[in-house]
Image (cartoon, rainbow, N blue to C red):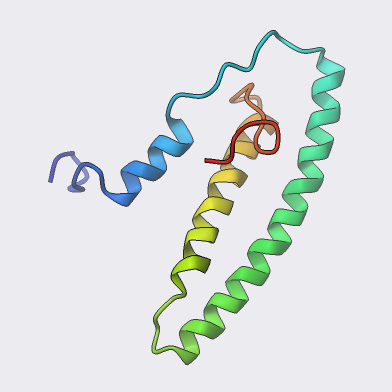
Length: 109
């Protein structure tokens, strides 16, 4: 146990924290505020689609766990983690906490 939360260094949560709060690519020069609005509208639509995908993945994972003795599908669980990271990055851009746009404008971690 290496930190105050009792987690070991390198634990999955540490990896997730690095993906959300780690070094971010340089966003480049400041863009026009109206161009940012266009990006925000596009990302808003993408967030709406992501919410639908998350809902479907949640239902599918529940059914899998129901039929598989409470064992989740690992690939679906990892997909959920990746989707959650993308949603968090999109929310950071939408709220002005970050100037870095999420995928497809930057790499998908």
